[in-house]
Length: 401
Image 1 (spheres, rainbow, N blue to C red):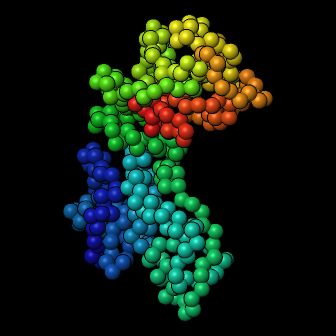
Image 2: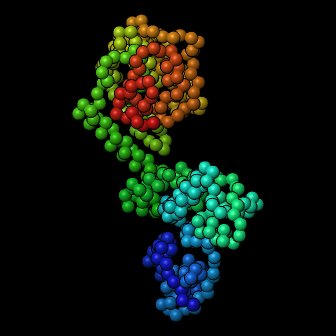
Image 3: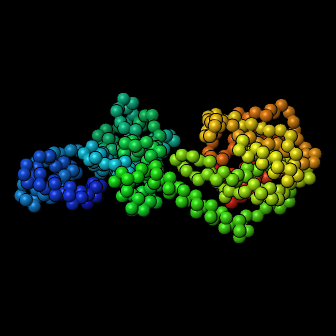
């Protein structure tokens, strides 16, 4: 039987090292080819597994057995090849993700097809058989073959389960979805030396990912500083009756996307620099100053310098605990301060705000709803990270969320 090597299929299989190839050749020369070559007869007898064994056997005129396997289409063959590698080779997690990503286009198409079906646009000309044990999708080839076998048109009625491409690929790779996403970034951005170190188990995926994100953050902060120096971040015109500000307090903490995340998204400022901020506040205005226990004393000095008097402290009680040196933190504070005699719709709001924690430094939506209900006038969020209807934002990271 004449066998065919399909380069696309062959390239899905990680190449053996020189040492691995020599060991395989030595084994075949002394014991023969013990494992059958797997082929797919699809017009041609295409090798699906056993390319190296085939080459060695051909070169040395050694007999080999074959095992035929059927696939509906090339995509199914590719999935089988990748999964087979996981079962036969002791691969590290990064290599497993690298292999699984070769199937990304297949699963992305699968996700698109399921999205189309879930929107109510069924496949034209399919049979309506609820009890058929299909997968969650039908490829175009499967659909065509299925319809040709039947003589009447009905519509497939089947619950369509949305496909999470990364989750499916992570499952194939045998890692968590979070690890898969980190590994993707490492494969995309890390140097060849770092990738080799991970595969040699000298450093972890988490460590490499953390270093990449730290470098990105440093670059981002440097760009922000440059923008500030060049005057690209300008105060909006006029004054505001309501100002919310979450200053970049000087924690002196390195950003770590794996562990401690206490680094502020803006370049840190000293207490003196924060005091010297010129707030565009109206003569009669309300200020909401976000702070933590560490900077509570400094906050009142800052309010004095800004010309505001504190009137209440709002405590945001979060739905889960965070970090802490002495006690684990599950709260954050916002000092309500006023200047002059601002207009305010006082009702039955209290000093407690129960709301879930979101992304690092992102304040709860319930807080802004409360401000909208209480305060009257033009609103500004200083060091904003999100555009909000009815508010103006100041900062160079206003599209973060």
